Length: 138
Image 1: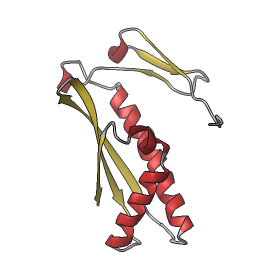
Image 2: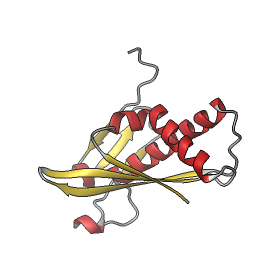
Image 3: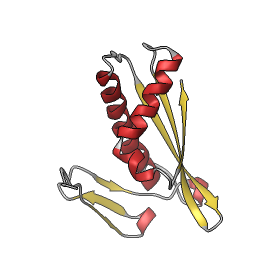
Image 4: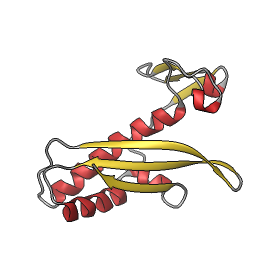
């Protein structure tokens, strides 16, 4: 596989309660453990939010690519990704729920586009077989 782009970030401090910064300095954030996990929560992000944001953007792009390949115009669309932490038999794992707003297409076509996007999206490829991913239409 030929590498097209590499993003680099470094975490310091107390892991989930520390700090993260991208190599170019564009991302430069304090992290906080959510209240639901026994942390202070507050005005800082956490790894699950960062993963959800990246997955949502990537999946939305894949969805638009799938539509373009089928000559379907998607307008006023949105993708929301919920990333959860769940207990597994061996510890803690991730869950992902993807909700898509596709007001310009019928339900059957929307589901087909979701499946096609799931095959195109690099995040979906990375999580396939490792994380339970569900889809819904808004």
